[in-house]
Image (cartoon, rainbow, N blue to C red; front, side, top):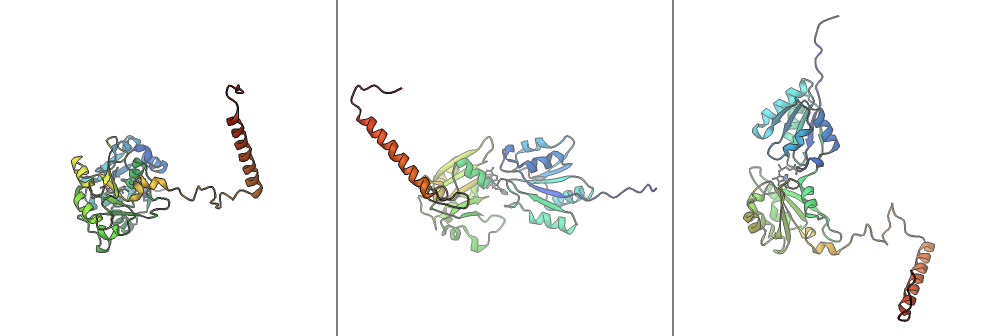
Length: 295
Ligand SMILES: C[S@@+](CC[C@H](N)C(=O)[O-])C[C@H]1O[C@@H](n2cnc3c(N)ncnc32)[C@H](O)[C@@H]1O
């Protein structure tokens, strides 16, 4: 028997989507991982802190908003290499504007395994707050996720003006502080009366929804003092007009794998019953005045 210390097996680093804010929008998997974690590195500028209440006592918490990339990846590699259960928490879904690749690359270079756990993106939380579907039956069938040029450049071919030419539903991240520019670019494709909504901190306790149209939304957002942590959604789908059209999916006459067409006998019997009910109603309507109603 030797006294040699067995080297610790490198743990998996879990990149977890925290959802938009409301802790109830964490996935069951994310909650389970947080409960077991020894080390949690979370994006403190956007992640609602109350999700950290699921962590066990004694967990090591680190707010990545105060750290640079090397510090973040260093913390993840060190924790995982010493066998610690390690969770990296991103806001919304980690695969959207999460600066994910630059972190996973370092883990790969260091032989640290990782997994990604999806979360509810703020785009979907904002649509839910607006009580609107991002696609519209008989209308737009396309949703664009984008942002304005900031310190992170946007490729020229993906400029807002060129995306606006599609007139699809467009979700603009990271741009609420540049509303004038967003509007000027969108106007190159959308009509001035196109519905636009800005959702500040969707699902947080202080959530604010600003609704308007392309020609007045910038003023409304500025008046509300919103410059960050907000989702801009534009397009006909989020307006009231979209409600007038029904989808084919639930239309009676639309059959598909899960719902077969009613048989001819069923249709005949249904028609007979409707006729019988209509006849009864007509008879009732003809009853002389004062005739007692059956109870
Ligand atoms: C770095 S990106 C992260 C996006 C995140 N991965 C997601 O899926 O929602 C940050 C931007 O996402 C949007 N955002 C994040 N959380 C939000 C929320 N709760 N409500 C509205 N917008 C939010 C804002 O546009 C913000 O500037």
